[in-house]
Amino acid sequence: MRKIILLVVLLFLFVSCSEKKENAPEQQTSVPEMQTPAKELTKIKKYKIPLDSSRIVTLKDFDPKDSIMIGVRAFNKAEKEFVKRWNYTKDTELFIDVVGKICRESRPCASRLDSVAYKNDVTSILDSLMRNGFLDKAIEARKQEMNGPCFGKNYEKNKKKCDEESEERIRKKVIEELKRKKGK
Image 1 (cartoon, rainbow, N blue to C red):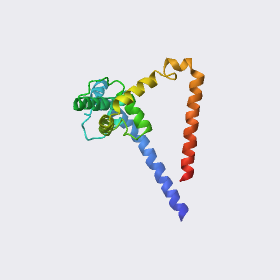
Image 2: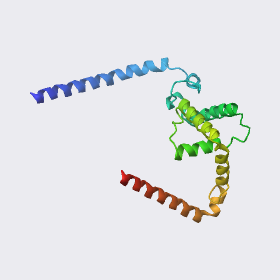
Image 3: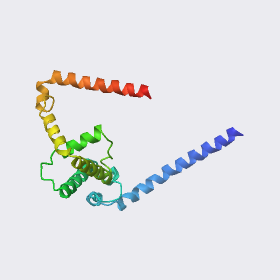
Image 4: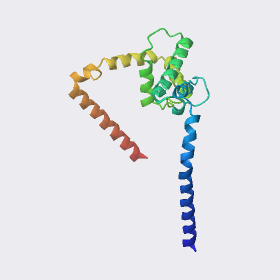
């Protein structure tokens, strides 16, 4: 009985697949007539969702080339709001470096593709640093790090030393992580 049912199901699948193949050429002839020109499609796709939108921004909403800019626009909006709110007159070029380092090392931040949540995270980080008096210190520390022996052009000069320091730092982090996991 099971064999008969299986045979009927397989026969039904073969028949339905062959019908689809026969209908496909007819559909292909009608499709080109209904297609819109490529220029119109690119115009339709190029729209921007405002940063204040409550909608979560995803890659479906933008060209892949624009996906990096989603987070940059959100960051720039948060930076402008911060400067206006605190009347901050100093250099703001290293804000993105400071916030990026905090997001990587200290606390998780929202994805840059979720522009509204990322903007809120950046705003809260900058406000917190300013309220606690750490913003200028963090920027100065980043400037010193950038002028250090293991950054940019200086890295090539001190490659062996920098690589050893990096390996030592990684080794320490791995040991700490293993100790932490064993303690659980």
